[in-house]
Length: 423
Ligand code: AMP
Ligand code: MG
Image (tube, rainbow, N blue to C red):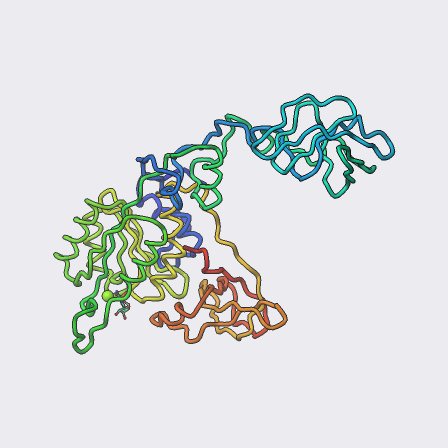
């Protein structure tokens, strides 16, 4: 990655910079250059840390496992006692998980051991129960064993002082289990990111009020609420702001004072952008792009005061697509997640024919499903207009069609990004 530019103006001077036809990847890379994690962390109990991002490495205070122990129910033996043929050994005791055997074990003797039981230091091999025959206080062991088999060595998973989980990791259920397994009660996580958002548009009405002619209910604040909730940020819903320079200035100034990130929807498309442009360039530094993508063409990114600003398009589907394609990763970076993992991409047969114009990346909404034979395929989720939120609601994936791609015949292979797990 190139060095961080000091100003958004540096970006706009680059040779390949065309704000009116900005490839998706280039916009993503440009935004990434301005992002660094917020500072500040807090100490949380293991359960409360689920979904949060580690601010410091979790270092193991112990060897994992703590003792040499058995991976099987069976007998702990000395390999040297087995010889070449069958061996008959005297069983002098039993080690259970949590209840070690501490007595002496002479030559030709062994102990019975349960999974997780501590292996006495004199024993070097575990023979699983199924490969033995017990009679009275002795056991007969067949041939074909290997020295050290079925024995888990102390520290083999993780040595004391080793890094169990690295800073930047988003804590999953497995991670909090791992932390608990080390006996650690609290971890240091990055503080939550504060995100302020509002909708812009004179036509917007909040739910609860009656619609007058030409008005519509504001839905973007609800999808944004949903997407931000899933990411685990603190957010401030600032409502609907009318397309009025004085009101917008007040909203932006207030948002920049309280939040790390400001997200708006609407007002950045051609015809609308002009006065917002002037306003935002007065309050900060903002780039306005037409992204070579569908849906979601207009996008603004920049700084308002010290807050990062994402100006998303107004169309409800565009808001979601641009959020997933640009904002999600950016927020994770600001939250301290490192690395931000790329979302998995699948290669799938598409059973629908797709209309696609070359020259832009398309994010069609798809339904990934399995047929009676267990074969997976994808189809498009109905009408694809950028205002048709139902296409998102019914979808479980994006069908991503690359810039140069034209129409897609039914039965072709396409790339698919699964929405499950996206947030
Ligand atoms: P704009 O980007 O402001 O030109 O808006 C594009 C389209 O999205 C227009 O049809 C708007 O009415 C619609 N729109 C903008 N904001 C919202 C919103 N918050 N909820 C639902 N539709 C919206
Ligand atoms: Mg508008």
